[in-house]
Image (cartoon, rainbow, N blue to C red; front, top):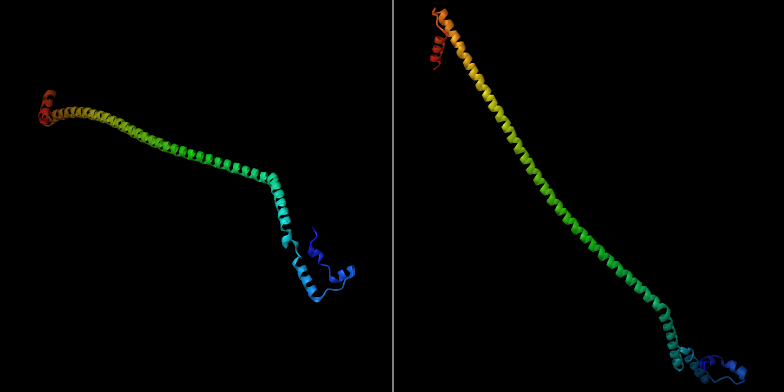
Length: 201
């Protein structure tokens, strides 16, 4: 069964004649024999062998699929599962990092807003304190100046009173001296004071 007619027909007519002792073929018979030999030259294309080829193809495919299922496919599945697990873990880590970054950014914004509010409050308080201090210093300075002014006015009044008193006394002395030297009049101190007082009024 496994020896094909094509292989059997590849021998030349001379060889058949030499071994079998037969005569050479006629010209028409040789051409027909050559055509039959060419038609059965390649067994896979011979319909006689299609069932056996299909059988061996099924057996080979079954063995290949069994080996693939038992050895290669589990490894591929395990690799895909590992990769899927790593991708899922990476996505979870990225999501957690994004959440942490958003929380940190929100905390930073909140801290910045609170710092701005505190700085504004500190600046306002410092401005108010400076204003109050300046107002208190101004009032203290004005009070000190008013006190000094009153003291100066008192001293001026005292000096003025003293000066006026001294002027009156000088005027009395001058009047008494003039009357004594010029008019040869001997007037008393009281009379000279009365004359000066009358002139001053």
